[in-house]
View 1: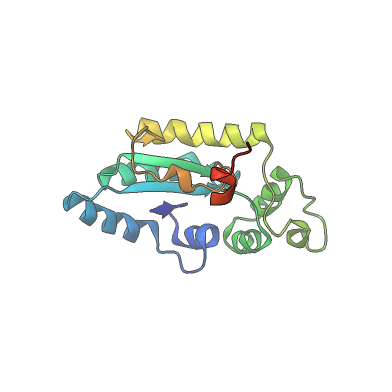
View 2: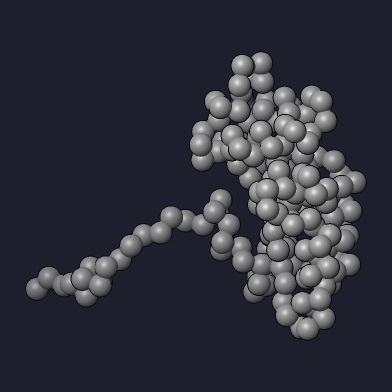
Length: 178
C-alpha cells in the first residue's frame, strides 16, 4: 500500500489524483490480512512541512497498526512541479512557501513551481535524514517495524534507494580472452 497522508486531499496531492484515501486502503488491507495475505505499507512520499504535523503521522501509524499491518517502509520524496502545485491547493496559507524554502526554492518568484526540476527537487541529506528519523520514531512507537529484514515491504522498489540498472549482455558474461 502506498500511504502518504491521512487526509484524502493530501493523499491525492502527494500520490496522484487517482489515489485512494488512506482509510479505504487500510480497510482493504485489513481484509487481506484476515485472509493471511501479507501486506506492507510504503509510507511516502514524505515531505517537510506536510509531514511535520505529528498528530497526523501518529494517527496514521496507529491506523496502520490497527489494520494488522506490521511492516512499513519510509520514503522521503522529491518535490516535482505537479506535486507542488497540487499541494499548494491543500496546504494552509504559508505552508507552500515553507515547503519551497525547504527545497531551496525562493517562494517569491512569479511561478516558483516551474523552477523545480521536472524529475523533482531533493532535500539535502541532513534534512532528509531528519525527516525520516522523525517519522520513524512515531511509526515505531505505534508498534510498526521499519524496513524489517525479510519483510514483504518492497523496499527494493523505492526509487530513492535502488541503484540504477546495469545491463549485462550474455556475450559480456561468457566472453573470455585466451
